[in-house]
Structure formats: C-alpha cells, structure tokens
Image (cartoon, rainbow, N blue to C red):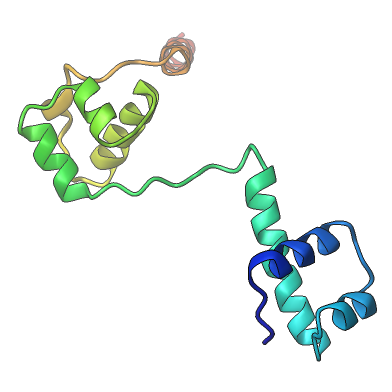
Length: 136
C-alpha cells in the first residue's frame, strides 16, 4: 500500500475531503491501484470524522487495580476525579456503577460516595406507583 506523510498526506486529505476524482488522486499522488487508494481514503475519512464529530466520545482507559487501590486507600471523590482525569462527578459515579455491576466493588464500600440522579429518582417513583397499582 502507498504511504503518504507530512505535507503530502495533508494535501491528500484535503483533496479527499474536497472529493477529488479517483483518477486524479491516483495520478497526483502516484497511487498504482484502486485498492491502495481506497485504503488511504478510508484512513483519511476515519481521521476526519474523529476530528469533526463532536458527539464522538473519547474512551478513557483506567487501570482497575490502581483505581480500586486508590479508592480503598482513602482518596476522596475529588482526588479520584483529578487523578484519573474524569472531568465530571457524573463520570466517577458511572465508574462506580460499572465496578459494582461487574462485581469488582461492593456497594457498601462506596455507599457514602454515591449520588442519585433525577432520572433514578423518577424511575424509583414510577416503579413504586406500578407496584401500588398492582396491589389495588
């Protein structure tokens, strides 16, 4: 497969985004096959979409063992958020829930750290209302 780098790669990307015809791209960048051209265009589109799609979420990788050690070692929520670059309290709560769901953490270990969201409160009230209706 052809490899492009530096300014040539940037020019190629611009031409792909501007929808230059395949034959012109192949001639301009000395690409010998449509297969190679397709692979290069796919790479360009992937990078372009990642950079221009604000809804695309960035996956943060956290070492579970280190996190649990810090949690059990006494770091408070704000320290965990800062250390693991979680940005928002909500992300920490989501991480707690994942660890509980997977059996890596017992809810009793973090009961005082959990916060309840409005949607969870609404869901609890709806479930209670449904249960009352069933009893009637």
